[in-house]
Amino acid sequence: PSLLLQTASLLTHLGYEVKLFPYVDSGKTWHVKGFLDQFERCSRYNMDLFVQAKEQGYFIVGVEPSMVSFFRKDYGDVFYEQGLDKTVLLIQELLDKSDIVIKTENQNKEPYYLLNHCMELSMEGDMDKIWERVFKKMGLSLELIKSGCCGMAGIFGMETRHEHLSTTIYKDHYQKVFCGKDLSRVLATGFSCRSQIKYFEKIDVKHPVDVLLTYLNST
Image 1: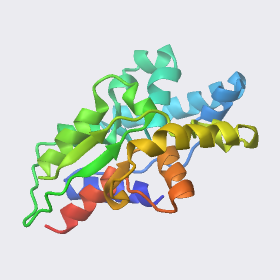
Image 2: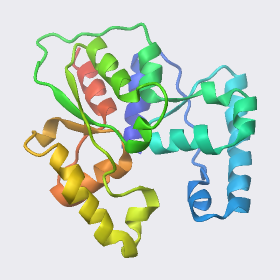
Image 3: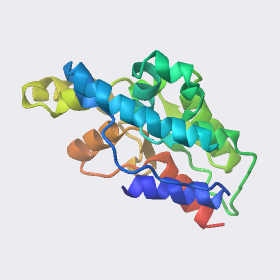
């Protein structure tokens, strides 16, 4: 909830009118586990909400890459027929559209380091490069870290039977890509990624929105 409120605050600062959807089940768990009837009920309900938002002229913006990717790729042909693939955006896509350029005084030129969610990197449009452009607009330096899956892989890493494999993926690969970097300046876009780092490293890494809002509030 804190990231959602931070995102709403950031967009409000930038002049956008923000409305929050009520909490609804995306249907992702039903879809992953093969319960397609339940998934269809969830998707139809959500589709109605999306269409209403579109008709009122709103962008639908998500901060969790796996969910935006899920909406774009797994909600079916109706999603495209309604033109919703062009309406559901990741937060950096909306920020990239903004003409507002904010550069803070006395900026710290030390870079931040970004870990993109692996589903985000599978989407069209170089989502990592978009974050780089957004940070540049704010006068901030951002370096992209090449990484793969953190080992959580959504519900996969939450199941006890997958704990060993999830841990192995994290320690044998993911942990190594940011080894030696100041974790206070490491950012991660995915909830799973941030959760894995918190579990193993005992530290909360930030989402890029958190950093942008902090710098915006300092101007």
